Length: 121
Picture 1: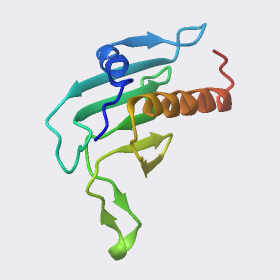
Picture 2: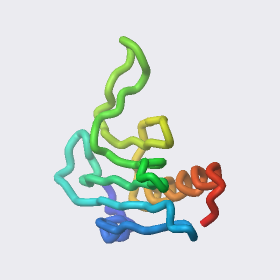
Picture 3: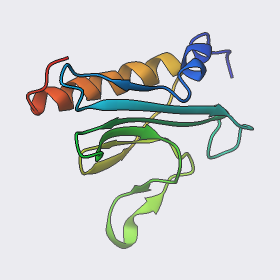
Picture 4: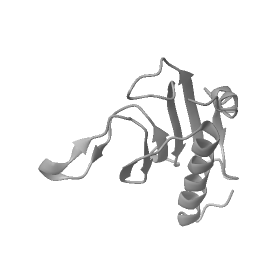
């Protein structure tokens, strides 16, 4: 695996909680730690990047805390990698490539969901 030059930036965000709208009603939280690389976490990271609304509900989340089931019914199966994203009520696998892409994808979804809610940054 190639070294990831953006990894240090992601790791520096660990523990940060940022209020992101002028009214102070929406906030993001970053939890990022190094872990031994495994099949489930081949990039050697435990991460959770989340956007929360005024009542604390998670509106957007990128994390790797559990396996993701692809498909429904008896044909559905869990993936070996745990990377996935939550957007409102949906859950989808996420193809982690590097820390910079993870941050860019997260902020793209944050801006989109806030825009749908009429919230400007």
